[in-house]
Image 1 (cartoon, rainbow, N blue to C red):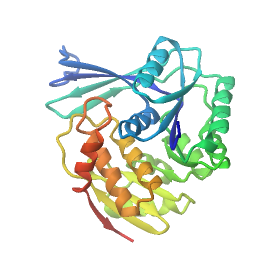
Image 2 (tube, rainbow, N blue to C red):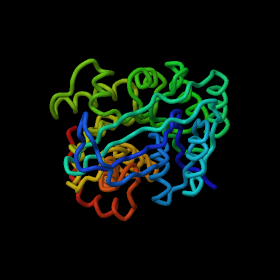
Image 3 (tube, rainbow, N blue to C red):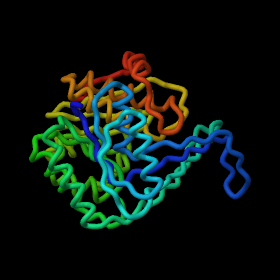
Image 4 (tube, one colour):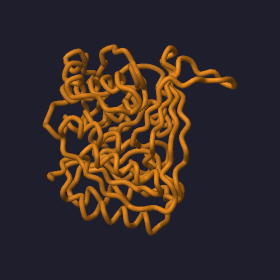
Length: 313
């Protein structure tokens, strides 16, 4: 199998999504539907790419019965998986989707404690495989026991083997990762504010944020703003993308599909305006699915024509 875009997910999970009409805090809630899906940000990217017919490999760390279930489920989806076995169980995250309120409440576990040896094994896998990858997406939270600069080390390793790197992280993982010079970052407005030290209050603030982040040596800066769309900066150009309105079934995983659409478009040689259209369409399409289910390619193609883009620089 030719792998074009790989993903690295240090802290995968089983996403258990409970659907109900309204969430009653402190009272009785009756569940209408339940979904259990293999997840974690990088894994969501691989699931989207695979559904779209794009070759992908998911590299991850799993443990216990929950981890083995996750790997088996990905294999059943025909996704190539490689993993490091850890001692404790892979976490389960709870998402409560209030259908009538169109609101999701997330309860995420921290994940299993990992050891230095397990992390070294993962880094060795990246080192041995990255020369086969066009792009690698490194994303999500890190499990307890992970050094603050571990993402930076993964980025340096992958780039030294010729792979282009997309980073989707928050907090110290994003700040340290920036120092390693990833080719693309995808912060949301909260994550960008954490790095920059000031809030993005309006459109002008978003444009300024993209410009400042790009000045740190990042080739592509994709700032996502939820249903408001996002901004893409590259070599002095900044493009805004506004997705079409859709009937939302979830908000979880939309950013992962957005990133999958962007990396796919860049790998296909799309220009900035086109890439922004595909990214915004993929994110909007993901909002129409249940849980963290990736959208069908036909839905993305239908929505891409409805995305509005404009250039700010």
